[in-house]
Length: 289
Ligand SMILES: Nc1ncnc2c1ncn2[C@@H]1O[C@H](COP(=O)(O)OP(=O)(O)O)[C@@H](O)[C@H]1O
Ligand SMILES: [Mg+2]
Image (cartoon, rainbow, N blue to C red; front, top):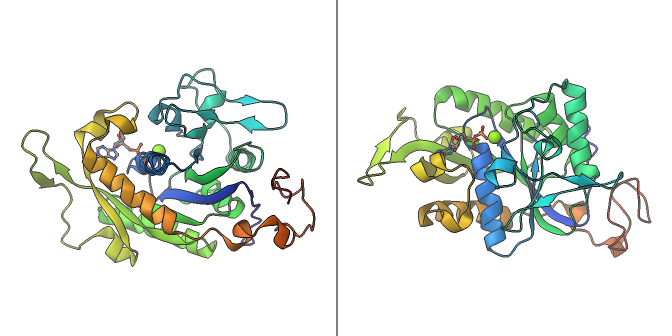
């Protein structure tokens, strides 16, 4: 496995947070949207990069499935939802959102690289990256290409999922990416009629996060409002969901931007080694780098 990441910094994006899971269907995209919305609700400028190329669910979740992204031949432009969240997803380039992406690994990896280097995101406080599930080469490319301030792991409590999750945690660590903590999803459900907590997964082993040796950011219950929503609208979410989302935002805001990204342009050149800015590293010339 190629272990030397070539991470290109974008000086106009302050922090990039990845949302990662060992397998699909555990709530990764839901968590990525809630994180983005909670940050946007605090007045931060937020973008979402849908890196789950073969299972892109972000346009729908953000209410943007009927929109199409545009390009001027050099740069791709994200679309913006009514909450001010910018989005780029492969499904924003398809006429038919049901069309499958039938590409092999290298092309998929190339798409991730392009989504990072060739997109005009403007100035962002946060870019949230919804990873593909697992430790595929697309996930590897994302880890190698994008300078994450940190990643959040999403897991359901079943043991076998935790085993798969450990692989994702190891991959992040091997690629020198800080793991910020775990979101445990759907350990219990809230009864829609009486509000009682019903435990769905009780393996008697405590939280997945403890077994992974990572901080538990939040344990989110199964909620009907989340399960039934076609798209997630912040203004319509129950207060309890917003509180859980605020914990995600708190963790994201507590991260340090990677040192090279935090460096001001005047302090000496680009991360790629150039002393003047720098079309080759993808940094913004607008900042006078
Ligand atoms: N806390 C939750 N309560 C209810 N349904 C949830 C919750 N988290 C996720 N879901 C539902 O589970 C399904 C999978 O979630 P999703 O975020 O798409 O997972 P992933 O991105 O990991 O594949 C979706 O239908 C989503 O609405
Ligand atoms: Mg998803």
